[in-house]
Each structure stands twice: as C-alpha cells, then as structure tokens.
Amino acid sequence: MKMTFRWFGEKDDSVTLDQIRQIPGVSGIVGALYDVPVGDVWPIEKILDLKKKVESYGLELEVIESVNVHEDIKLGLPTRDRYIENYKETIKNLGKAGVKVVCYNFMPVFDWIRTNLNEKLPDGSYVMSYDEDKIRGIDPLKLIEDMDKGSNGFILPGWELDRLKELRMLFDMYKDVDEEKLFDNLKYFLENIIPTCEEYDVKMAIHPDDPPWSLFGLPRIVTCKENLERIVNLVDSPYNGLTLCSGSLGSNPENNIPELIRYFGKMGRIHFGHVRNIKFTGEGKFYETSHLSSDGSFDMFEIMKAYYDIGFEGYIRPDHGRMIWGEKARPGYGLYDRALGVAYLNGLWEAIQKMS
Ligand SMILES: [Mn+2]
Image (tube, rainbow, N blue to C red; front, side, top):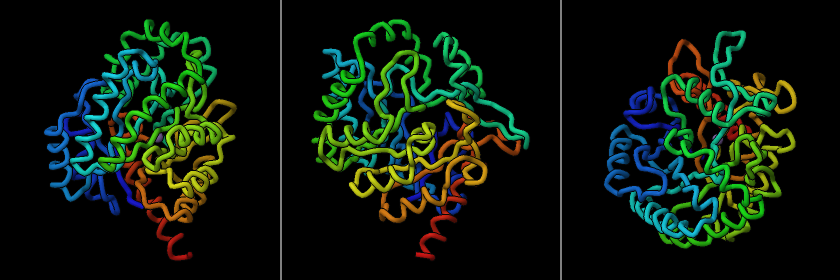
C-alpha cells in the first residue's frame, strides 16, 4: 500500500507541498493539470513540470485524479472519436512521465453532489453533508449556485463552472441516454483506450458515482457490486480497474465496502482506494465525519484489514476531511483533518501488519 495525498497545485490549493511532505508516511501526490480544458491533450511539458515540482519535495507523482472524460464521450456523440484520440495522447504523455494510475469518472453532467458544504457539528468542526430531500424538486442550476457559494472561493473538483454553463442543453441531450446506453458508451471508450493504457503501463481506475444512484433523472451506473462487475468485464484487462471510494459507494448502505474490496481486490482490479468515513442520519441522509470508526458508520479497521488481506499494492489516500482548527480551505480538502486521516489509517495498517 502506498499512502498518497490529493493536491490541487500551487495556484489552487491552500495546502503546500512543504506541508504535505511533513505528514508521516505519505509517499506521493495525487495530482492533475487543472488548466487544460476537458477534452484537450495534456501537454507532456506541463506534466513534467508538475512531476519535477512534486519530486523536488521528495514526493512521487504516480496517480492522477482526474483526467475528466468529455461529455461527448459519455453521450456517445459522433464527435467522441476526436476526444478519445486526445485521451489516448494524454495517457501516452502521462505514461512517459511515470504515472501509473488514472482516476476518472463517468457521471453524466454532474460530478459528486453534497447539499451542504459547511455544516457545523456540535464540536465546532465543519463538514459536508447530503440530504436527498433537499435534492428532490430543486432546480439543478440552483444546486450549482449553492455549491459555488459554499466553496470558500475555491473551485470544487468536477464543478468547474465552464463545464456546467450549458447545463440545460446537456440535460436535453441526455434524454435519449439510459443506463444501458451509458454502459455502451463506457464500453466504447474503454475498448478504444485500454490498448494504449497497456502499452504505456497506465492503469485506469473508474471512480464510483457519488452518491451512487440516479439524480435529476440522469443515468448513473458506477453504483453497486453488480455494475462494478459489469464494468470490469467490459474490457477484460487489469488496466480496466476501479477506484474503490468507501464514502461514495458506502453512502448506499447496501454496498458492503470490506466485501467489495476483497472481491475486486482478489481480481486485481482495485488500483486506487479512497478511504473515508460517513455518518448516516437517516435514509438518503449523511454527513462526512473524521476518519475514525467511532465517529461514523463504517468500520475503518475492517476496511483497512480487507486491503491488507488482499495484499493491496496500489495507492490509497484519505478522502474528504472536516474543516477544523479554523482552517480555511477547499471544502473536504483542508490539511489538518486529512493529515489526521493519514496518521490514523497508517496506524491501523501498522497494527494489522504486526498482528498478522
Ligand atoms: Mn472518492
């Protein structure tokens, strides 16, 4: 297991590489180029610049999150072939720069969704929360406005406004795309890019939908064991793999996270693990807690034990943290609580290792 930490780059992150390198047990950064428009090729020079910067702090750049998939690919439009060619070029460039895993998602229109980015808990910390009742009947444009307002001035990953400004048109285009069509479009995408991934040794790791169910009538397919199995079988190659995100998949209590880790881990299809805890407060209601088991609804020991038992050699990162100690940062991506998460997950790992 390699412990990593997500970083949004010098211009876009309140956290510095200098701070990250001081967190015990972090081997590398999960990075991305944020100034390349979705669908364009990531220039090798820019990737190498980022790599050089990260490595100058003694950290590695082996995981990218995300290379976003152009909406035309998800929609299956004739223009998709051009964007798929660009995606392959990006994979080539990333492979040449030593990147091993690319996390991506295949969610139509929206990325992850929370209904409150700054909910105050009794202990004074702030967390992100979700309430399905608040989603029902809300205009999606209003949701975007609220997500933008609550972001402390940062751009939220997946919520870049330029991507969303043609929202109404996008909704219209998805009218003919149901789950089956979306599976077809994902298959077409994977069939085209996986040979390049194999050649350049870059593993694809699809991120679950968050939350893992359909919203606003849009199809969502990366949601449950059955669908994950279908996805890894769309192209039978170890390069077609998963990001196992405990918080996303786990927000449906029917998804048993340790079981999923064991099942897909044994198949060699988990390349990246997002490990975080959430607390259910009702049906379709939860908030993101600290990583500690007793703070939330998940047994984090069982999650780390599952990774240990499958002999996991991929990458893990703490996921969203709370906002604590007065920190002002991108919601979910402050320094303090994620660093606590790293220390805790590494502690679990050491204990499991020594007791095995
Ligand atoms: Mn995640």
